[in-house]
Image: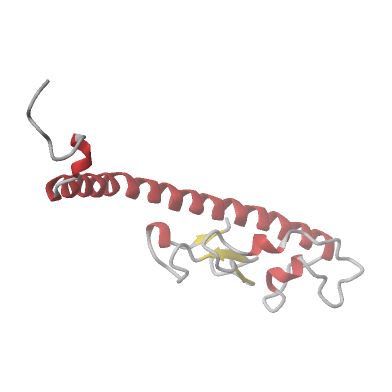
Length: 147
C-alpha cells in the first residue's frame, strides 16, 4: 500500500483552471461564428422564397376576384376585398379568396397592394418590402413584386 496521501480522492474533484474555461469559451465562440451565419442566411433565403410564393398565390386570388366581380379591387379596398365583399359587389363576389394570414409577409409586415401598380401599370402590384420593411433595398431587403 502506498504511503502517499492525496488531498482529494479523485482528480476531477479539483475543478477547472481558468485556462481550461477560457479555451472552452473560445471554442464555443469560434463554432458560433462559423456555424450561425450560414444558418441565418438560409432562413432569410427561405423567407424570400416564401414571400415570392405567397405573392404569386395572392395574384391568382386577385385574378379570380376580377373574373368573378368584373374588376380588380381598387386601392381603397386593397387586399381586404379578397376576404370581405366590397359594397356593391355582394351579388358577384364568390369569396373569400384567401385567408387573412396570407396578407402578412414572412417578416410579419402587411403586404402592400397598389392599383394601378408601378411595375404592372395596367393592373396592380402586390409588394413585400423584404426583411427591412422599407421600399427599395438590396439582397434580403429588396422589394418582392408580383410578375
